[in-house]
Length: 376
Ligand SMILES: [Zn+2]
Image 1 (spheres, helix red, strand yellow):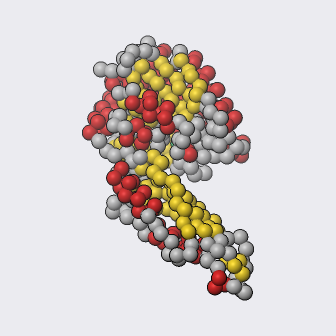
Image 2: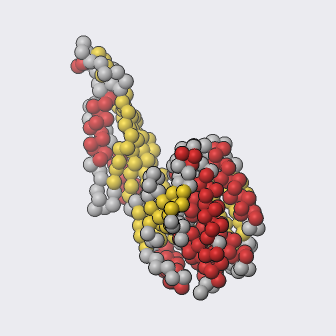
Image 3: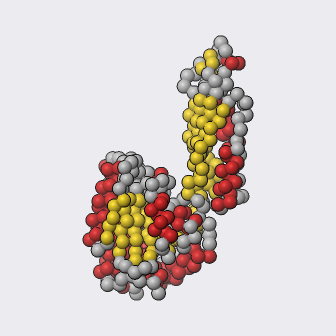
């Protein structure tokens, strides 16, 4: 029996209480002060564990945080995000609730449970006097749900210096994540010519009609066989029913499984031409998170985790997903990356989101034992 697992099972109540406090702190990505309150909370908790905590101040977003434990020249990077997709006051309307072994509340699964798991793994290593051979760097960012526009350089810089990257995003049914699709974000602006819908219909160029044709072309690029999908998720156009619309606009989400396919799709979207010569298209955007492709080094890391998990009585298997995480950045750099090490549960970004509280000590023990194992 693992001392670490024993210890953490005894800490389950404390872990649940920490999770309750974190879920009570609303942290929408675009609410700087709110996200900073999570940073204050986690910063204090990590400092209490002896970590050296640095805030990386941001103007528009909440601060990012980098907590370092231990020394040495080899490094393991832990990744977690403090922001959620939920608005301010969500926690008041839908507070943290425990029913049996399940907890609900905004962000309980994605991914405040993962922050708790990271924190208590560090606690267990300190309390049980089992310092890892590696220096641990725990990055907590504030803008993950928006594609990590400002934290990406920080993550990539620390990732490059690391032997392994362990991502504390949540896990469906207990699987570990070994690949993720890449994500592209594009915007299409269509300009037409306004005219009276009754008196001069023929003189107008409908931007809405043009956009409708572009949407069909975009959606037709979806190819499930290749693992490629295009979603025109937001459209806007026109402003009066009796005017030929002069402008229309769409926001497009693209998912791909390989970097090569990402380049192909970027080119295909950027080469779209207007169906009506009198309309103009302005296409902006590009690939945001690169695909995380399966790799031998990623597979080795998974197998190590699987072995460590088996010693703890955990049955672990690899899985992939169309959803991206910050693990995409480090995996694309060739750094061994493993994800889904966070809390087990389901329904990220949905009102039905829940977390399995029994997984808190077990996953935390898995993380701590994996960190030790990587030093052997
Ligand atoms: Zn997440």
